[in-house]
Image 1 (spheres, rainbow, N blue to C red):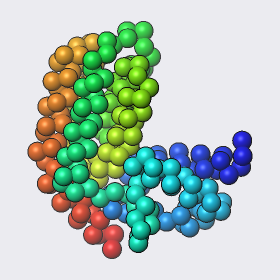
Image 2 (image 1 turned 30 degrees about the horizontal axis):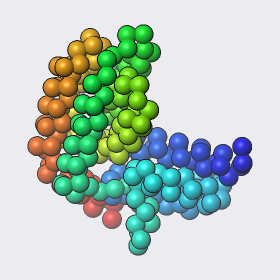
Image 3 (image 1 turned 45 degrees about the horizontal axis):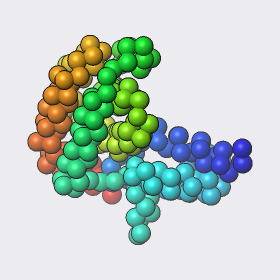
Image 4 (image 1 turned 60 degrees about the vertical axis):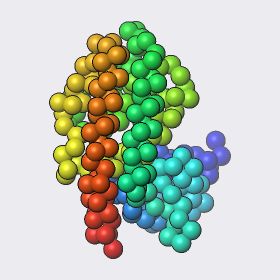
Length: 207
């Protein structure tokens, strides 16, 4: 593999995981120079990786401020929740394949709620067997990951809610899972003003 492409792939995966883990918060700038220094490489593969993430909508390339984690508006966040809901409902239209290995991903006990949410929604999408649908959920999951992480202090996500979704998925109860997913997203859309206000406050602390 070309060295630049190899380094780009490494940086892409690293920054993507960092966004999911909460290293960067919505509204925060991602500096290519700092990443190049941290990973001992030139800015070329770093910028290639960041442009790839920007193309997926995970970060944005602001004309004046460079690469940033998106800070959503209320309208934008509601749209993200609506889109994720629609994608997962579409995935529920596909029968659950009992021989699937997707359940193994959900077997481990994990107290990291944003991570658990990402894995569960990814498993539901992968079960559909539709590559394009799975990729769309993956991108939507990645865009929402920093928001879920930054919103932990609002205690929006609770283990019992995710456990209920997981139980319905594992039980192959797609009809009730669809209703539960709609309720899950309706709850978050009601809290959009509080979430956006919290994200803006956290952004302001960076400046």
